[in-house]
Image (cartoon, rainbow, N blue to C red; front, side, top):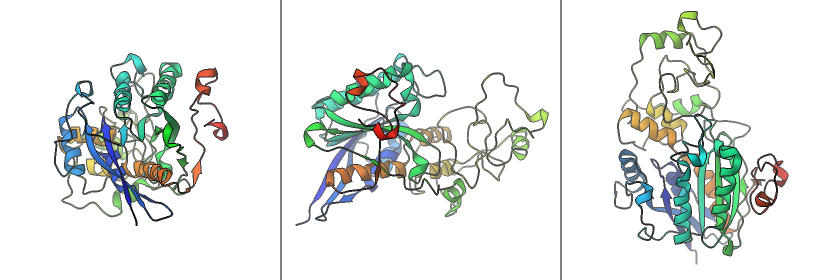
Length: 379
């Protein structure tokens, strides 16, 4: 008799639902054709429109199990039981863009609420996600502390940490994120990083945005009116280049001293993945079309983040931009969670060594844990 194993998923800092959508699309079958799936059952975020977006697309509009509140106010004893936990804890204090305050910032300590949820519910597995800058915050000490806390949470977990390049997994965007998969020790399973699927043939920005064309009545597709100076500047910036392009006329250049952000008025290159879509930033940071002299629409940003056109975002145009930029790409999440389900199904899949060391050695050695070659990355 065929059976279906469904992991009930809870999520902290859920954003609009990119990770949960990827979870809903993930599946695996064992050698007896038993099926393994994931069902989102509860989620939390602090932003009202974000919660509405999540509820609309993941829970058919039902906000009952999507409490919109600061995570500090959540009583995890009252959260419905779950088998799996996901938390892409806020990355503001770990991002390489900005001051990178790590634990000393407002957002750094928020990962501890994921640890708290694990201690109370002891899920079978969890997925934690953050920016690549997490590795170097507080001179690398923050990441070591996070790994130790996750490893020892609840009944204890076997961790696999890896810096994923999502463009290697079908996402038309150079988006690099640290993802930590933890499987409860008593289950005797070890997650392995799935092999890249598109490393030799990236999905381009043009493919993502134009295939198929976005319909005229698509939601979240408003075009931003650009000022004359911006339009004139963009006319002189070739695809793939930014405002620091040498051919830009003098009167259109920016008078900026010191560090120069590469994304300022940077146009997409049609034949390459987009650069990282961000959720905030002032003039020049909105992402710009390779041919048309304008910023991307939110629907175009959503496509680069691999959200389907049927996924509708709630809120103002700027709030939606923030939601999209902070989200986990569903296609990237699915690739990882397919592998999680295959691990539980105990079926083989193509894998590569993790590129971040976890386990006892990080406490016993002084080496930089991020400099080990991939062959020994998971010792």
